[in-house]
Amino acid sequence: MRRRDLLSLSAALGLAPGALQASTPAGGSAAPGQAIRTHALSLLGEPALPADFTHFPWVNPAAPKGGEIALTALGSFDSFNQFVLRGTAAVGLGLLYDTLLKESADEASTEYPYLAQWIDLPADRMGISFELNPAARWHDGRPVTAADVVFTFNTLRTHGRPFYRSYWADVTEVVAESERRVTFRFRNTENRELGLILGQMPVLPAHWWQGRDFARPLLDIPLGSGPYRLERFEAGRSLVYRRAPDWWARDIPSMKGTQNFDVQRYEYFRDTTVALEAFKAGQIDFRTENVARDWATAYDFPAARRGLVKRDEIRHELPTGMQAFAVNLRRPLFQDARVRQALNQVFDFEWMNANLFFGAYARTNSFFSNSELASSGLPTGAELAVLERFRGRVPAEVFTEEFKLPVTDGSGNNREGLRRALALLQAAGWRVQDRRLVNARNQRFEFEILLQGPTFERIALPYVQALERLGMSVRVRTVDPAQYQTRIDNFDFDMTVDVIGQSLSPGNEQRDFWTCAKANENGSQNVAGICDPAIDEMVELVVNAPDREQLIARTRALDRVLLWNHFVIPQWHNRTFRVAFWDKFGRPERNPRYGLGLDSWWVDAARERALADARRTL
Image 1 (cartoon, rainbow, N blue to C red):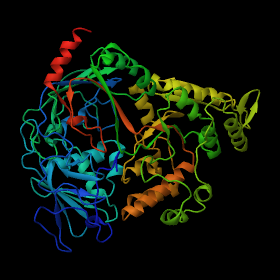
Image 2 (tube, rainbow, N blue to C red):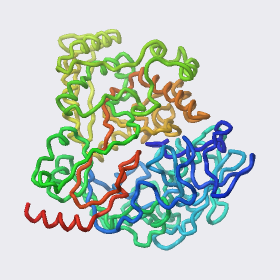
Image 3 (cartoon, helix red, strand yellow):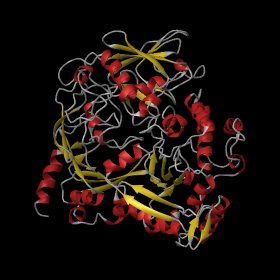
Image 4 (cartoon, rainbow, N blue to C red):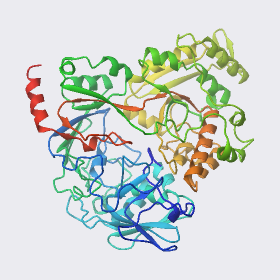
């Protein structure tokens, strides 16, 4: 599933007998062969909350409403249509829309009612129906209808980003059966998560989009049904979202105690350095810190020393996915796996972690890191049985060697890695001549690393120095976020930094990451351009895994094959959210296991007054 495991189905949609995890309404039941009506769906077990739950357990249901939170964004924007490739979408637009179901940030693979108050699972396992809440309203007062759901699905799949076409590829039809009931029909019963990933869909108003070209960017303030309205904006610079006081979902159980700020304001900055200074100056209230050096050294300023600015490291249980230097396999330069392996040999993580990151990170050695889905050791059991189908079509090392990334002593003198890299390059037909790495046609090994901001330059430049010791010519080019996104969408790069988020329940989104169909479709998430028929087949095995045990085995097998192809140079991950904030907020006693939970924070009026008084003396 997308980003993290949001959704699930079970036997009613094709899992093994006895695996059904959908709850029936309180006091209800379902005989074999009958349709099931449920309030929640879970992949990994019975939903923790009953049909009559009043609020999520980590929130404060009595959290006060009011106040403002100021947040940062980087770059610029020129569109309020985040669903298409064209334009640079503004941040925060998700606040305008409601989805059919609401994920629980405290349970893996579990969702509860939101726009849909009931879910019906048919006996033939060939679809799913959602019954909309009769209270759901657009901000103009009109009801949210099944026709809006149909419009949204068809429009996103036809005109939206390529992701939607692959994500919902196995839906054959969507029908509005009444004003409040919408049914999706499926191609088969094998795609176990399909019904629930539809619950992620933000529903759009068909009447507002009538007469507008959905495929184009726009700066008309969109109509939504969500907790906030876009009150005002300055193009490319700032946005102000104001809480809708008559929001229809304010007191439904999955939303109670959340969306507590009256105003969420976003200020745009060109780079992270300026954004950090704006936070120190009190122009920004809350930030997550992604730069280990800044976390270690940049928060020693008067307000922090006086306790007016707080910092916290919040542990989470989210899979950390893969952050890596990704090569563009569409370039002939990177099509030999020995070349890609050589690029891995000279990346000195241990030196970087000690000298640049203050020891804050762990090396990422799986595309599904920080989860039970990550491969390790040698394949055995069910995983080996999956891989046996592909023997001779995947790297032989998959069966005989444990995948391990090179480890250095951290001194910065990675001579062994350079030797191994040079041997691999020579085997691939490259040689050093006059301190230049060239091929048989005397063409030099040269490429560009494309970055979207200066923060990563301090990582890329030491890597470039190591590559140049092999005789390569490597340039680093930093562009603004809008230009960067355009070039990535069009695959106009040699190497870049790619972040491939994963969930506890991988599924349909894997098609967009790894398959041939997406390798040359502009805007897809297959940034590297991976195209291998064996990997395509493995992705379908993951999508159609019949139960959790097989999902784990198939995902580990896919992970192992991706790793041994050396498509990326893995970087690092962190298992905490690093947050800094001015001391004006209240927050629940604990955080959910799988999220930051900022939407359940609130402005504490007493703290805000005390902070205002203290800041006058700074």
